[in-house]
Image (cartoon, rainbow over all chains, first blue to last red; front, side, top):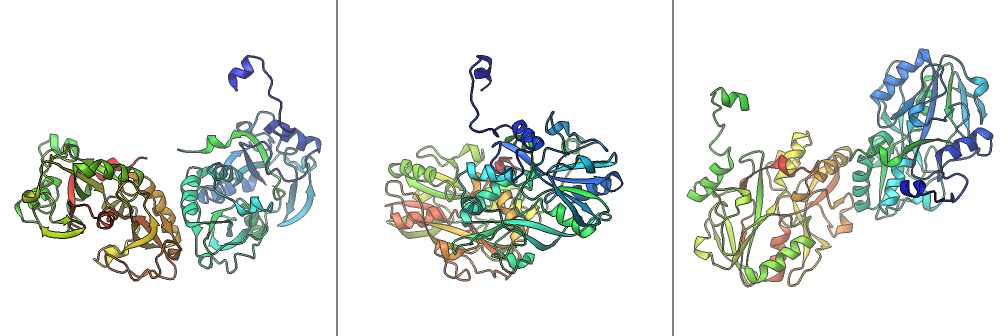
Length: 274
Length: 274
């Protein structure tokens, strides 16, 4: 690619949303208002949690204590809506396709632009998401049923408690993917390489031990069948911070709308530790 | 430790069999005639397969095609009973506590010294064993029930077929260790680092899929309970070469007696790839 660029050749994009910047600009202009799955393949997508500075340090400590559900991949300076480490031309207020604005634990706005809600004391946290490790799993040939059937991954509020820090506490949300035992072992190996996007699974095989009575009844997303020759494999999920925000009822917060992520300039492969 | 040695201090050994050489000399003199588990902690122990040169190349190709059950960690030159890469002072004929001598697939001798059976055309294969990865699991605090109850790990002739090569073929033997799901995930991560001693598990959780109808009825070793909050985790087992030898009925072969390994000068930590 580098030499092609030097030689002045031109590689047309397969769609309008192959590069992270094109997706961010699409969100900013209002052209993209829905899920980012499949956009800008190869690039890291992130969840959002925005909190007043007064709460932000405590939330950072909470994330630090719970790195599997809440892996922070970037954060802003107080009051800033930039996260330069994730993209030079990046505006937290406009570059997600959708946002939820929370007051005292309740959604007060569902919007595509939070500029009007921005305050000088806000801190933005961008949190790693499973899209990155799913790409790695797919590249290794592992089938992911929710993708095959075009639905959102099933997610469960488990009985596993996050490590509480200050005002933040709550149950861990986990996403579930059914895999054959051999593929489950391979998936554990692959996702272990991606600690900043939830890493290795939290659980495999005995869902009742983590408070999941029925794998066909997720709390979020759509159900997927677990066949007789498969094990349900559970990963810590980036919906956990939202769940914790709900439980902790901060007076003000902004999150991304489900499925509507920030597309960053970071490549998924950069997150692999091995 | 290095500086302590330089300063001339003296560290007495905890028992007579703390070093690999002391174990090998104990076997050679006839002082040790039983299992080597727990001897010379930290050092690699190996299984044995000895074959006439006429068969040896085929067996090496078989091992190469089946690296998980048959990881070759050292082999001799034809006719030689030395494997210098595993220990300078090492004699394949005497340094195991016990041997089985096979003729046409049947045991013709169960002995502590195979010098009288040695021939100029024999090739010795030393094959990695699970002791090495079990040490790593124990050091990470994972409980291993067969060790807690002082019995031999349960092993199963599964329905999984080895990749056949020439005259060698047969079912894969796997050892089973019950672990909680979280510990199973951790064990997969840890043993992945040790590809030359069976590596990551072959199977987890659904034993009927690999032809194991009853986990309490192993083909070799002693049964261990799998509790309600545990999954049976199966690793490829170094007994597989013996099982294959039995199936393939070579006219002559020597193996170690079960549990009676060669203690090499290699450290377990040398086998870790990460």
